Length: 119
Image 1 (tube, rainbow, N blue to C red):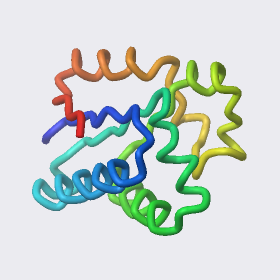
Image 2: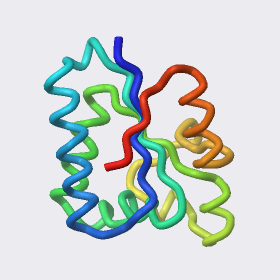
Image 3: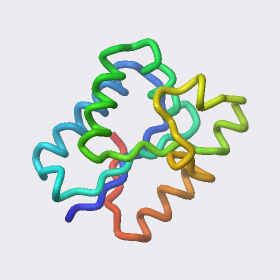
Image 4: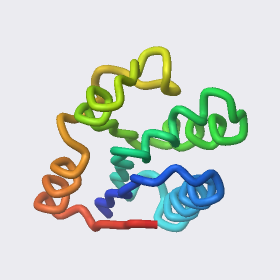
């Protein structure tokens, strides 16, 4: 089973949509039963979920990936530092999606054998 972490810390719309496409293609190539894929967002990367509140295409792509088992993890440090209310400002974030630190989560996952992808 592949273990992969996608690291997202930018908020350019074109790049975010391309990243979602990369993730979908990755899932399709390996098969959802054969992969544990996590998306870790921090800093400007939270733009992925804030933009999905109003961008229906982005929202649909994220929802589809979640249904395929992809986890989207949000940095608590960023939420606090930027005063973001994840319940109202971000698309579909639950308490279980919050990690203490985005960069620390990426490092932890790498230690657990997750391959690092920075699209």
